[in-house]
Structures are given as structure tokens and as C-alpha cells.
Amino acid sequence: MENTFDLDEVSKHCTADDIWIAVDGKVYDLSTYKTHPAGTDIIVENAGKDATQEFKDAEHTSMDLEELKKYYIGDLEEKINTDTKSSRKRKPISKPKSSQEVKKNSTERRDFSLVRSVAIDLTILFGIKLLADSI
Image 1: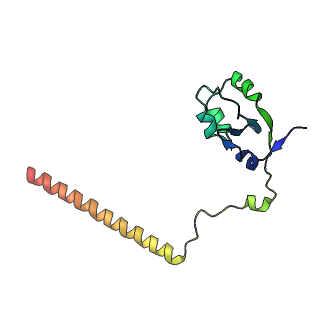
Image 2 (image 1 turned 180 degrees about the vertical axis):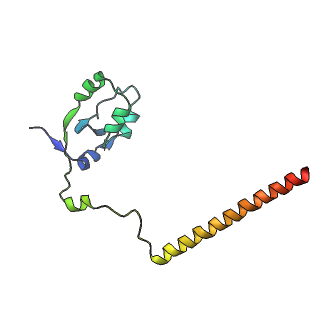
Image 3 (image 1 turned 90 degrees about the vertical axis):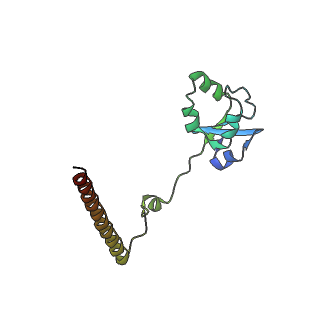
């Protein structure tokens, strides 16, 4: 029977002398692995974590995968969400606005539009005046 570990257990092994990582649902004990081409710091940085994405981002070769298999100690237990109702709920992006807030925002937008229109008109008039004065 194979061992199964949850991420909480894996996270307890996060020091330079005690390194567990999870990759693609499998758990590896890399405590004795000291020959990483990029140095052991990269392994220690990912100790105690699910390092699947980091492992893939590093573009490891098939030989690297074979080497990793030597350190396999078990599978990563998937947490199953038993509360299906809460997983289907959508959280609102923001608190619904009151009618006063909606009116205030509408007024602010209208005021801004008016100021912008006046600024554009003044810029055009000023440009025409400068052009007329230069002729």
C-alpha cells in the first residue's frame, strides 16, 4: 500500500535538512538530493509546497523526471470540497450600491462630462484665436 500525504503534512517538511515537495500529485523527499544544477537553494525555496508549476516552468527533461522518481515517497491527497452549495455560490464583486450612491455617481459623471466639454471648447477657441492672430 502506498503512502498518502496531504499538503499540510508536506508543508511541515520545509527546511534545508528536511525537504518534501509535491509535483503532479506525487510527494518526493528531496532531503538527501544535493546535486541540482541550479543549486540546492531552488529546492529549499519550494520545500513544503506543491511545486508542480515551478517544476514545469523549469522545463525539466525526461532524465530529470527519472531522477525525481528515486525520491518518491507517496501520493498527494486531494482535498474534496464536500460543501457543494458553497462551491457553486458566486461572490459579488462589490457591495451593491444604494440608489443615493448611484445618483451621486451619475451626477459626478455628468459634471465631469460638462467640464470636459467646456475644456475642449475653450481649447478649440484658444487655438482658433492663436491661428487668427498669427495670420
